[in-house]
Length: 482
Image 1 (cartoon, one colour):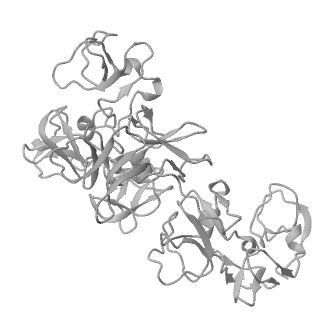
Image 2 (cartoon, helix red, strand yellow):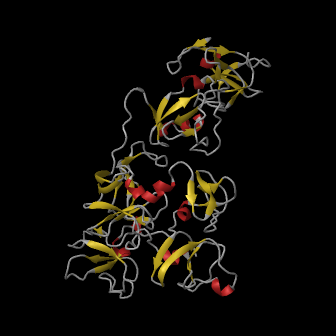
Image 3 (cartoon, helix red, strand yellow):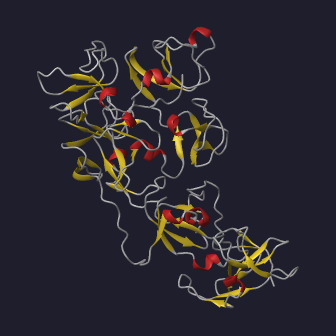
C-alpha cells in the first residue's frame, strides 16, 4: 500500500538502503525491494501487526497504511510512508518512535531528561543543547524541567553510547558527590568557609582582589569575584570552580564511565593539547585528562566571550576562519549564530589578562589594533612583525604590544610552585620560572631561562630544565604561529 507503482521483490540488500518504514539500515540480509525506485522495506516491517502496544505509552498505536506526508509528534521530523496513530492522544508517530525511551540519562546533561510530546509554555530555552537549532515545542523532544533545557530527539539518541535508559523512574536521582564540605554560612546561607577535596586547608570566601594577583588554581584564569582563598598559602579558587563535582559525565569523551576530578599532576589535555598541572577531569578507564577550563568551555549551551556581543555555541562540525588566530583548518569551533564570528577552542580559552616580565603592569587581550601606525605592528618582546588583525596582548599605560605566544610562553597553564615527583632526584621538585637570575641546569649546564624544576629542600641547589624531565607527550604546545 505504501508503494503501488511496482511490485517488491525479496532480494539481498547489497546497497544497504534504509527501510522506508522504520528508517533504519541493517548491516546485511534480505529485504523487500523495488530496485528502480530504490525502495526498501525490512521483512518484519512488511508484515507488522495492525495494533502495537508499547509500555512507554499508555495507549495502543494503530498502523495507518497510507502514503501521506506527516510530521512525527514524537521526534519532530517528517515521514511519508507508514505511520502509527494514537487516537486517544491524537498523535502520529514513526514506527521507530513508538518505542522511544521515556526517561534517559545522557552524557549531554547532568540530570535525567524526559521525553515529552509537547513542551509547556514556561520553557525559557527552546534551542537544542546539542545542535543549537530551534526545537519545535509542538512536537516531541527530550527536556529537563529542572534546568529548562531541551534537545531534539534524534540529536540525543544519535549516538547510542552517549546515553542509557532509566528503567525505574521512581528511584531518586543520584547526583555526583560534591567537591566541598561547607563549614560555615552567612545569614544569606552563602558558604563562607569550606573544605575542598583537593586542598588541605580551609578556604574562606573573599571579594578583595587587590591582594591576590595569582590565577585560579582550578582553571588557571585570572581571579574575579567571588572566590575562595586559603589563609595559610596562596591557593585560590573561583566560586564557580568549587561547584564542580568529584565525578562528572562529559559528552566529548568516548568512554561510558564518569570522569574524576584530579589536581597536582602534570598532564596534557586531550582537547586543547596544552600542558597543565591545574584541575582536570581524568577517565578512570583510559586515563585521558581534560583541563577544567576545557570542560567549562565545552559545557552544552551558550557561552559568553568578552570580545563578542552575542553568545557563542560550540559546533562539532564548523567551517570558517578563527577570528583570533586566523586558523582556517577548523574542524570544530565556537560560532555565533547571528554573525560569522568564529573561535577555535584554544583561542576561546585564552586568558583575558596576563603577566609578563616585559611590563610591570597587567597585559590585556585585545582583538583589534589601537592605531594604524606601522611602528605599532611589532611585538615588543620578540621584535618581530605583528598582524594587527590577529589578537594580541597590550599594556595601555606603557603602549606595549606583544604576540599571544610571546606573552603566554610555551607553558601558560603550569602553576608555579606545584610539586613534581622526579624519580632521578631524591627530593621533591617544584615548578619555577626565573625572572632575571638564571641558574645553570643540572643536566645540560645551560641557563634555566624557561620553565624549570627546582629542588624544594633547603640547601639543595639542584635545578633542571623541564624539557629534560618531562615525558615526550608533555613537551608543550603553542596556540598558533606568530
